[in-house]
Amino acid sequence: MAQKRASISDIAKELNLAVSTVSRALSGHSRISEATRKRVWKLAEQLNYQPNHLAAALRKGRSNTLGVIVPHIDGHFFSQVMKGAEAVANRAGFNVLLCQSNEDYGQEQKNVDTMINAQVDGIMVSVARTTHDYKHFDKIKKRDIPLVFFDRILDSPEVNAVELDDFQGGYQSTKHLLEQGCRRIAHFGGPQHLNIYINRFGGYRQALLEYGIPIEEELVLFSEMWEADGRAGMEQLLALPKPPEAVFSASDFSIVGAMRVLKERKLRIPEDIALSGFSNESFTSLTEPNLTSVDQCCEEMGLAAMRLLLEMVQEHEQAPRKIVIQPRLIKRESSLWHQG
Image (cartoon, rainbow, N blue to C red; front, side, top):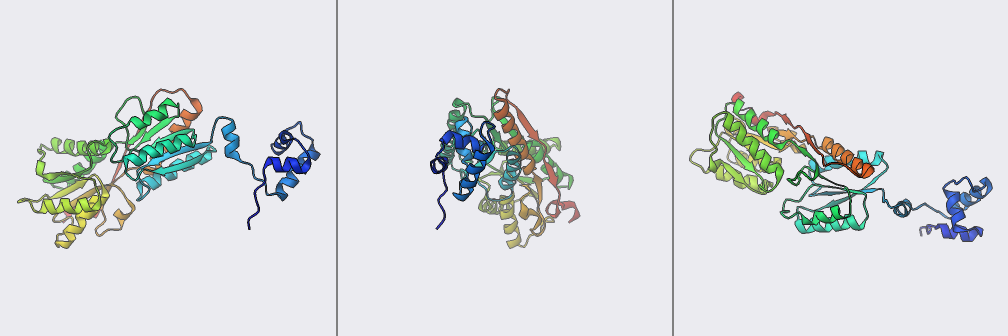
């Protein structure tokens, strides 16, 4: 059976000392004699005493904990964001409390309450796919808890945010397909209330506009961006009298679904239809052929968002800031149409 962890009161009682004396001895206070400090620490070790840093921090009005709310931790993107964020937080002496909304608005509301009740010193958030109303974040602001949005952010000049230049990512990906000689390019887009999908679609439109190619409604399909959506989308495109020559998807998951349909139909990638995705998920370099995708620089985003949050925690007063990270298009076999 595990030995019960002792408290300062237990040590004080055993040594017939005041609790305040034991507390000072454990913290190395100069007013406590060396002999007393040694007696206290010797007994503390014998009784398995471990200091409660959280309680000490709360007494000082801080928890030394930063909260992060993400839609999910599956896949490459959010796990790598967390890697960067935790590295920065830990170096600064902070712990990280992570909550997942699982893309659910109601769960995201509960996550916010959890963070507030945990008395975190600051919060990083990427909003859920089903979130249309953002009033629950007002609770955070009313309590003067520093708040930074990342990736999926609120469209407001009043928020602190770190985002990818998703417009540029969509533009680069579509322009690349155009440079391969593709002209009839379809787009798998995500929910258009989220900034990332609005901007990726905007980049697609801009690239076509520059090449004098009109947007064709039948080639633009919006969905939740899961693999099943990609399958359904590709089935719909192949049923057209004139299927597309290429597809730019705002998600790697949906483009994998599309790829599977093409393989089932014995259609060649990229010779029959070129494919390009978004996020550079780890599986994109493992598919056959390898998938072209936009790298979101996720670890860099985590580093930047946590640094911004720590600046707000430490400086308190600060004008709203928005940091924009530039994407990188990773060109692989799936989009090299002109070489087919």
